[in-house]
Image (cartoon, rainbow, N blue to C red; front, side, top):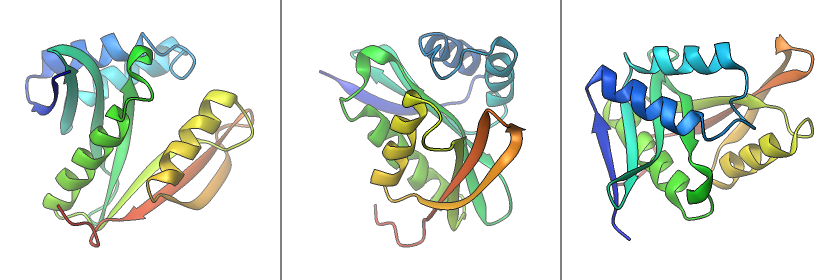
Length: 159
């Protein structure tokens, strides 16, 4: 299996990859208008894609949330590639990119643990990779989707 992660520059290619992956993940990205916003807003930000045997497998997008903190704006790995380490590889590449861009911290927003099984897996994924709970905003999105923010200190990372 040939696995490659590369930065995508072309905005049209970014949109196509984001759409292909997110449409494969309706359990996480089932609200059409939100999915479209992720796709559109991904085109202007640093975008890393993962390919398996030249086939799109996943992507991650870096967005600045402050001068010191990068944010995982959106990330997805197609279901058939879950549990193969691709998400971990994408996250690691994102963290290296964020650190190289001068960010000291990374953050990610997700739905708080205990609301949905799919998001519980997402929470466990980030926790297992060193992300710590910072704060929960119970009504940032809406009462059914309390926003949990996780953070990670990047300066301790080694290549």
